[in-house]
Length: 436
Image 1 (cartoon, rainbow, N blue to C red):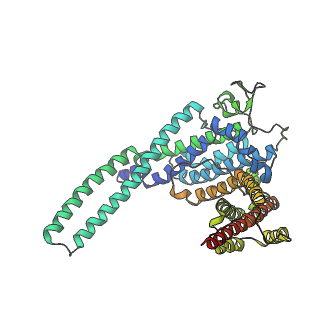
Image 2: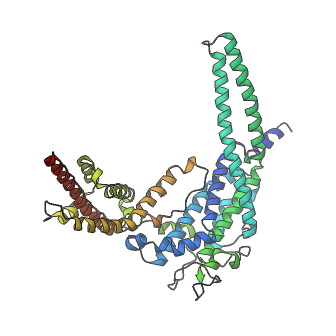
Image 3: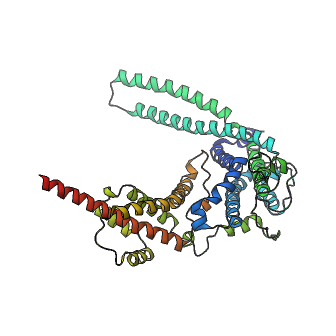
């Protein structure tokens, strides 16, 4: 009996509620990325974007495979955290979460019926969303409580104030401290902090099982369909339109390429096979470690092309210093024989049009690369849902040779319009000085 209070305390989420809220937030984001709207957008927009088709791949099957693999990898990373937390549970089945999840991922067998129906999953998501919001508020209020406590402690030690001023300040802080403690107590009662540890882990487990079932369902991956997630309720029922493009009815079927799908070896472990897909081929920027660098380079050039008259010599030299040797060589070859003068307004206009076309398909991939990277850099600090940028929409899988050719073209065009703007400015100044 003396340990009853301790065991009761351990049964609540307590300080782990903040980590659990973060995991719930990621699960909510994953589920939303598998909604009907998101999957239709993936099929009709994301893999059909001009930049993706030009320098990543025009193979629909490959692109859908990348999308599936990245979603599966995100699930695997969350599952790894859930597995660590579940070891603290008293429920033996939850303690063995990693074993059951591994079984479900590889065979599709749901031993404990943890996969929820779409209706139950939506209800569970609403509850998790409330918990995430309240727990995030609790975190902020606890930080505020700590600030007030520190201020009060310093006030007791401070000797700079007159006695009456010091006493009043202490009274004010004590009053503020009282109400802040009441606020924190109230939020603890409503948030994950005071929820049963087993209950919140069970929510995580059921959610991630359902999300993995949804991924397999949407992308038409083997082992049949989980009985509680029927095809008629899945996003896969909306991805193949009827022959009449204006009709609102859709035929049922999983999201897959129009090409015949090769039978996959079901003995291959699900997460291992998907992780291999995310390894960039040797011909890509990802394999060369240049994806982020080229993204920054393209964004800088985009700004210069929009306002070439504002680009100074130093900025131009800085841009050149960012270029790898392969682009420098191709740029030198392209600029050989180019005249010193750049005074043709027609040619300048043609270059602006050409550069605009290139940036129209290349720039989105560069911006997506920065966005994708920054989201993962701050992932641990942010409880809020993230955007649905996938790696296939970035420069990570872009062909290195094709990307460098496009960048070289941008540099050649930028060189001309930059020189044109300088010559026009010099000419205007010269004419102005002559008039004086």
